[in-house]
Amino acid sequence: MNIAFFLLPKKDVVSVTLDSTLRQTLERMEYHRYTAVPIIGKDGVYVGTVTEGDLLWYMKNSGGRVTFENASKYLLKDVPLKMNIKAVSIDADMEGLINLAKVQNFVPVVDDMGRFIGIVRRSQIIEYCERFVTRDVSVPKN
Image (tube, rainbow, N blue to C red):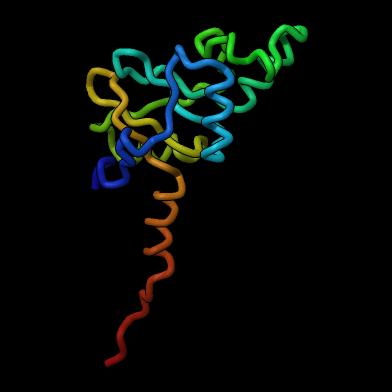
């Protein structure tokens, strides 16, 4: 089995760019009801993942300078990311994917050039494993 089996392709992933404003990012996250979304660079490279906490701490630590009302004046590239959400290569083994999924709700997947190609959701891995745990594994009687 390989990572591609679980891949949600980038066309189906909600993401933002470094040039997105704070307001755009917040509204996109709110609309889709996500607490974190991947950030994709202009060249398609996975940059990192922004969380609600990153945005809230940035606003709080601005000393009142950044508010929701003026959040469209500030770019995501200026927001420090607190979490280091690691990506996995599409060629990585399943053990590497599972180790990241233990501590991340989703795992960004990149190609050999570091370009973002999609994500694997932790819930997809759990649902796959659940099928094996809950299936009938009793030994047939002769």
